[in-house]
Image (cartoon, rainbow over all chains, first blue to last red; front, side, top):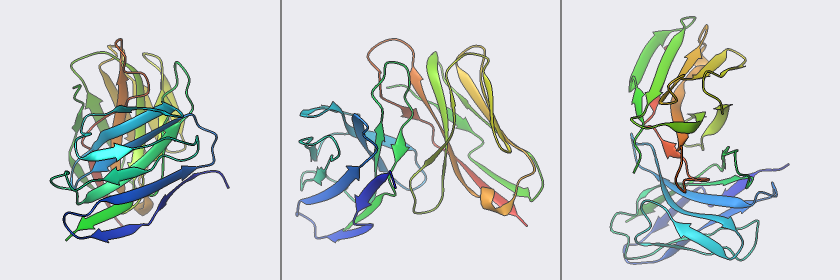
Length: 114
Length: 114
């Protein structure tokens, strides 16, 4: 089945450690996105990538890093520089067209930093 | 950045009632999307709107792209318990280099009592 997978569903890390969240899609979508969601809030864009080997910062990129070496993969690293990393992280993808902006989301990874 | 104001913030309704929620912006948008998110899951796309005045239905859901291009509305008819969740509006501002970047509202939490 086509879709977006994120792993793991739940992740626990100690403060000061870097952690990498996985996002894979088999929809043949060009663009991929990472969002952060905090309780009671909407989604905030961390990074996005429209093509392989290229990505741009979103609204809250500080303390995060990404890579896009393959079309189907867009991993997010939460570094120790991120002051408040505990959150629900969502990955999304979309076809890269000039008009259509329909983004499809994965199931999310809940990161808890202890 | 752009802000979307979504209202109401929460709704408590009886099964069978109709639901209305809206999303407004101070600037013009080219695209409006409506998503539903269930607890611990990623948002699911419900309806996409691309033209001012456009009215689109998806089962019991109907959404409209406001004529002023600064707002959008979502209606749910004859609500059922499985309608429970958080409903998000999202949009793409007109002009600029906002291609592919969605702005999200804060969400409307819907609770349906049997």
